[in-house]
Length: 133
Image 1: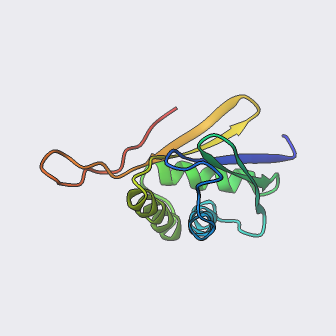
Image 2: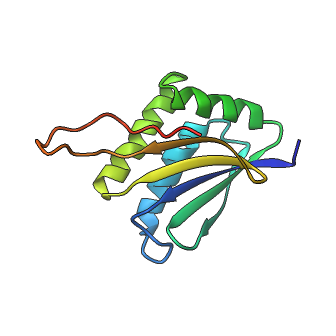
């Protein structure tokens, strides 16, 4: 197993230079709640292009975080993680953004979840959009 596991939250509506610091903090707080294991999950950087928040999970916590993310992706898991996912979805909706959370070990994508609120032509909100591998 590698030293750590990376998770990337891509927010399509922003670039690093256009993402307000206060909004970045809100996204980071919800992402930390979603991933859990907060003492072992660390912010690494914001990558250029669309804003991509890169977090690193220590190896000892990686299996727990991976399980938690998979459970959220399936619509189950700890209540706090599900609330954090909805919190991320709310932020994305306010920003008219699409966000994609991916975990990768090297070049292999382990799981992907995407949160966005879509409006139907009648103005009704659709369910969360989940993207699989």
